[in-house]
Length: 89
Image (cartoon, rainbow, N blue to C red; front, side, top):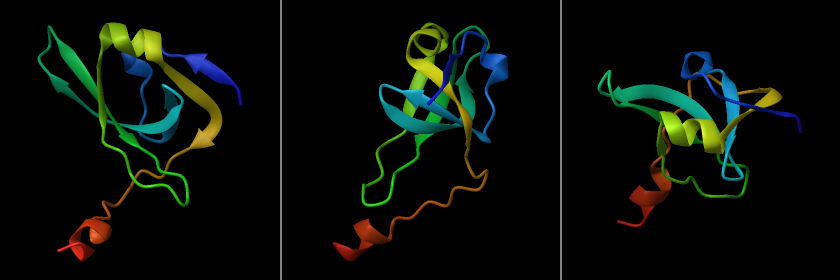
């Protein structure tokens, strides 16, 4: 698996897959203010694993912890599946 570090947040793309702390994530959106932007990533669960929560990184953490996985792409429409949690009630 080839990884490219992300130093420029303008290169973030929702159709690409990113590795953050050993997990695979998809870029969702930018939040925060223009002087203090935050970048929100959604976890891409592998089959048989449960969905983890989203990760929010600032510009410094993005450069340190985030790398693009070359050759992998994410579906742009990732549906939220909360059926497991609803079954508990």
